[in-house]
Image (tube, rainbow, N blue to C red; front, side, top):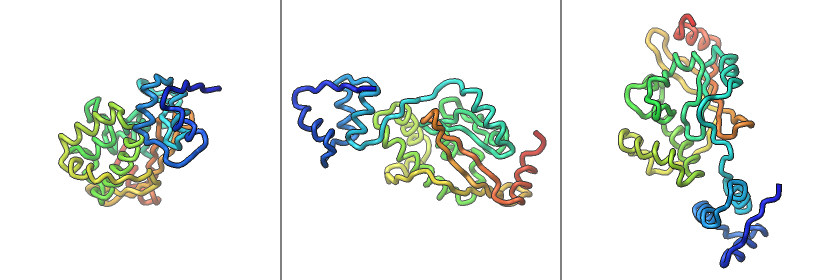
Length: 234
């Protein structure tokens, strides 16, 4: 595919610098403003970002119903809890073990989101061991993705509402910590079972770049037995 960007008066000097990879490139905000001014289509906008060495906007913003292949994948992963998250950390789908463990469906439709699950009061995340530190890691990951999409209305909505409703989110957000997603471990404490440790792996879906598959695998055989007991009959 050939991407054609029409130069405008005053833009040629910096565009030449972009093509030549010279230092001192414009920021994301400047690049996006220029793209709007020139009325670039999505592919030309992404090309401009690439020239500047900046994160490329997602060209796949999956919304609405999830492809049946992902539903089958989530089913095949059972009994390990698993879910699909979209670009904004909204829950796109989850399997029954994940539902039984974390109950994302208890959240209102516009708040069916990992950040809401973690920062809203009265959710299943209350039993997470080291919940505060885990929350800081999640917020840092969310911060990084949001920073790559300035002006995105859904990010603005989530950040604005959580700032209003969660004191913890309101306190931590301005600290501007940024962190990439990592394979990690979480532990949750449940009555009569003690601590269950789960290894969390996050995988990007190549065919749908805006989706992330999150799988929580019991760390040891003992954790698998505890999880099975917690989930009960299917």
